[in-house]
Image 1 (cartoon, rainbow, N blue to C red):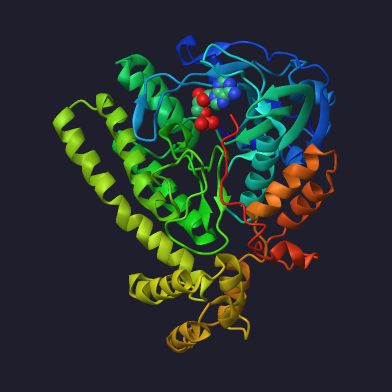
Image 2: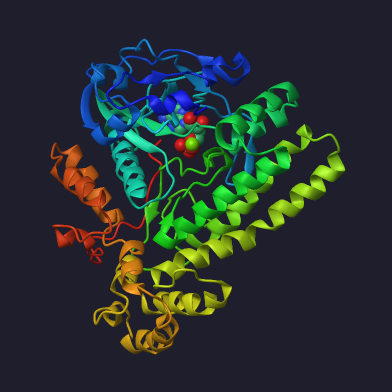
Length: 479
Ligand code: AMP
Ligand code: MG
């Protein structure tokens, strides 16, 4: 917990480590060190994040964050969890290729997990090799750091270490280890595993831990559920407002903290369409762009179910939890309207503004408008050119102008709500392919531009949608 003395900790002091999860009973994890790799080399180091964590002085980076050296502050372990994958309950998952190294309390007093991903097999690897290919690691680094710069709660990326080993996927690919930083790695699935096994002592311990770490004001499991619901409702509304499609919203990829986690097959839309899906394994569009608002409610219902055994009166718990989950769609909708309101220059949009917002979105879908560039261009002469039929935009614009006359500074609000640059899928893919052939320049250029997404990037090509030849319509988990 962030106690008062942690606020005294400054960036120049030694980092404060405190491995609270490792102090929980053994039922929650398996302790083990990372499996060493052949030739660890530091590919990326997130210096600003390292400074925030007090890790800027960390030596032996390639060895530590490649898994060849266990630092004195670490207590490495693989966490146990379960989860619904595409709607089917998998009673046991767990970190199959990740290890929690430990927790650091950074310069802001915030406790954060330091996790290696791709660090070798664990007892939870099932048939996997425990490794990660460089491509998906680069994708996660770019996407999670872009989301952070866009102001979205997310896990962060501290380091990439290439391993000098190959991993076999569809083809043999260079291996890498990502160091992920998170408010915690507690997931809906962490609760599900102990509820499903009727391990009520562990469930209670986990609950107490999660309350203390993330939602300290929660007085009971209903409060706690509502706090997670509130965080996830805001999160998904932000995803929608950026055209972000997570791609694999399984309950094991859904955090208790409200941070975005697990950037496997995610992508951001170019041309707007509510049914857009990128993930190659999402055959039925369960996690399509516009389904995300429904799926998150379903996920919260699974959390609610897992919390029921903590309540003294089961029937009363079910009634109260059902009500909380049923209230979530309205919460998401309100957050969505507020977020899209800001994008069209309305500081405090209410449900009365929903028709104006949704009319624009439906014209964008019909007109094959680019999501990011249309919002960025609103009110300028270029906006209409985003639509197949410019008059479709012009019709909408009249009503919009009438609505925003009462707003004080709509242009300034729009400029800080509509990014100029997002990690477009074809650019992410180009950066990965170039890195595979030894050229890291596109990765570096994209990463640098994404750090200031609301400013016009120095290379305007990065703001352009893909040409027909450049479109990358599918993403792969790469696992
Ligand atoms: P994900 O779809 O990335 O959320 O992963 C689902 C589950 O599969 C988690 O338990 C992961 O730890 C596990 N997993 C994914 N990739 C691998 C891998 N290469 N080796 C072992 N386990 C893996
Ligand atoms: Mg996962």
